[in-house]
Image (cartoon, rainbow, N blue to C red; front, top):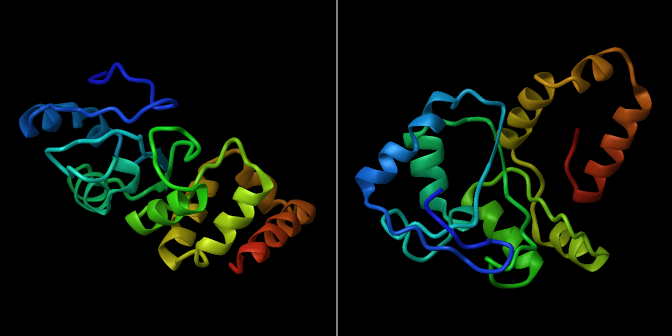
Amino acid sequence: GRSDVDTHKTLPTVTASAADLEADIAPFRALNQALIGMTGHLLFPVWDAQNPATLSPTIIADIIRGLIGFDGLLLTDDIDMEALGGTIPERAARAHAAGCDIILNCWAKMADMEGICAALPTMSAATTARLDRALAGTRIAPAIAHGHAGLLAKRDELLALTGAAA
């Protein structure tokens, strides 16, 4: 609520004080046991003057994982939004390096998807564990548990494209 800029078009800067932001994150702390969370493409100079939250190791490690205490699966907002600079694969690599588990590329051009796969390493053990926890808490978990071999095979096929193991 502190920004009136559309992140689809430009990068908003939230100039609130550390004390104000501390108050703003109270609801997120209350929900820190959520299985899945999403970053936003906003610049918070009081926390990181150089990087928007999605691309900020400081915000992800110190604020989201630390201060808020969130240990769920962390997704980016769509990295194709104009709030972020660089190529789509560069954005994906920076978001992953910052600590995001899953990179969303909602406009998904084939060249971008191939570039993302080439730019990113395999899933870490921590990401795999968070993904497993998140899936276990969804409606898809019973389907997986009851032998949906086709679904599991498709998952494994997609993971193989990235070099990750199921």
